[in-house]
Image 1: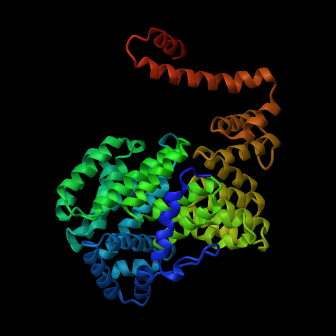
Image 2 (image 1 turned 60 degrees about the vertical axis):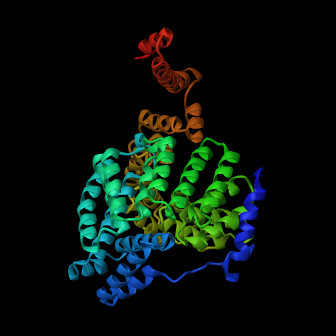
Length: 498
């Protein structure tokens, strides 16, 4: 259990007192559906009333220049519009041909950016396929002139436009150019904006090549240059949340909890911090707190992906697991890999009282392919291997397994190895099967380790699996120590292993 639960429960208690009565019911989470700006815009676009949609988007842009929370909601609505474009491309193409307004260019630019991010994925750079990087850079290059066009037509106070230019500058030309774009953008935005500085703070995290000192310095300078800006508290909240995420990854959960508390003290409306708190509480076994925090996150942002998947995982363990399906579908649409895999397993096998729905599985997997993620390839492999809504095609399934494996999905490396070892739909090749299992074992897959131990003698397992791993680790350690002057032994070890 969390060691410092009192302060979190206090924050939740204060929110319950202040929230609308229908916003939270303990034990039976209620879906709060705020008036959807994007839903209204889509209705107008569908009716061909483009002028009305454009006028309302422009109105929200003006309101967002002085209201942080309007700005945040506007960004979420624009993100929803970009996702809808992928579902109904013909509808948006008609709008694009009919209008030269900046709003349609902005949504189109966000569409390109979102597909680019999906192509890159969330994995470490070393685990990202080179084709994914190439596609990401090509899409970012296409998005940049669209953001510039939107900015020219909507005016310099268009925070989402400025933010988009920061993103494309970072990916197309690097951090230094992004910093220059941020500086120009914040001056143009007057009060420093909201989305633009938050985006830049994101890239100052250590995992993107920055440092906590740089992040803290940026927030300090922002507070000095824009005194009284509500964005300062949001930036401080976000920085504390980023630090909490890193501590959680390092399994320092108590410290992560403390920083999430700090984050929510700065900005009680930080939906992503509430979602992180929900996931952390769930990992610690505090289901009541996790449910409360997830509900709070979804009240603030109905598209908080982590909150949806966390609540789904808790509902699956409850007395009515079928209640989790709605959250699983919502999280899957937003790109959650765990939700995708779980939903497919339930629908393919008819679990929790749901009928088997192979056609639906195929549809979900095809939709996931638009994100070009390793999990999506594994999903399609299952479709063709088991015949879920498509005819069984094991050679095609094998190709998808290999592609998912190349992109870092270790489970698919195990499955590809099984097919090779058995000659299941492909020519039997024991050496290639073992190579796939070694790849999965190196990535930490325990099944692959057990399979290798079962197919090899102790000596062969040591020579082919353990010895290369030892050498890799020793060489990496030697390279680190070699950087310290005067450590001759490490230098010699590095030379011997080179």
